[in-house]
Image (cartoon, rainbow, N blue to C red):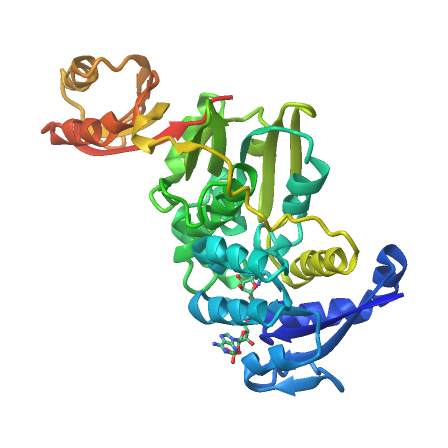
Length: 421
Ligand SMILES: NC(=O)c1ccc[n+]([C@@H]2O[C@H](COP(=O)([O-])OP(=O)(O)OC[C@H]3O[C@@H](n4cnc5c(N)ncnc54)[C@H](OP(=O)(O)O)[C@@H]3O)[C@@H](O)[C@H]2O)c1
């Protein structure tokens, strides 16, 4: 049986989960892959009371891990700059690298892969996108014969958990507090709820599928913090729910890259994926539309992705799926040039003529209105209006919002894009 010798840098959640999974699932790994994974050394600047590393050598300086007689450095420290330095040092020392770190791949992937090619080593990162849900290998191996025209999905478990609860009537703040209490959201949830985590993941998938740069050039990112639970009520009356969707697609050699909330048809596959799970839809030419869903975080599922990378490295003739298609030709479609149909929530004074003043702004901009409905009064003087527009170009959007809000009778306006079926 072939042995792959690894050094693990970092000794937190993922590293200790990896240690346990390699130990507990040793037989499965040996039988299924014919590979034995041997942890030679762990870089831990302090002990972790939750895991005893047994007889494995410990280095307090994580960079010293690289000097050991190992085949692979497994980077599990997180963050960007030290992780980048560690990965580049490992590469220059001719060690393969496996990382679960989406941030370092998103910000420095191009440089890291360039150095890896130069030094004839691999950098694999299956668990950086949706933990162990095998999206990277699916795209690069199983779908290798396909042209992927669109990849879209809910790539952040925390956002999907919050939105699923809001769909059932909960409000944003109490659901976020609950998610933090249950461990589904970080104490500082900014990265998740402002869309950055999902943006990192779709940015990496876009680089993989289309050869866009890391970090990407033109990218629209918006989080879920402005969504109100009344938006769900109104959306559902019209046959939609609300999801945070990350999208990368290509047509006529132009790439669209975005991550933001959308109204999405209640009948769609993605609309029905609830809770902390991640879900991805892939449109291909040969295989049609494909779905994949799974846990996007957690010790065991992340360990599963890392182990699959290690097995991959140990197998001879491993392909070059760290090569991010750097010679593909494309241009980025500016987000401002995209068109969307929109949902608008407008809160206005209950006075005659208010609907007419709103619709005249749309008319002056040549933006069609599919429907406009005055809902039940919030109180004596305030009325919510739900308006669905026709498609219009994104660069009109912020000006339209500003003009409606300038009306004396309008108190509030918010909007959500509608994802085409
Ligand atoms: N948790 C998940 O479910 C999950 C899923 C997919 C991917 N990931 C990725 O996996 C990576 C690790 O996540 P985690 O949850 O295991 O984080 P964690 O629990 O915070 O562990 C990080 C470990 O790295 C060490 N470390 C951090 N900076 C260091 C430095 N400059 N020098 C030396 N040691 C350093 C920490 O040491 P101290 O304890 O001394 O600070 C700790 O042992 C991250 O990139 C994360 O995005 C995590």
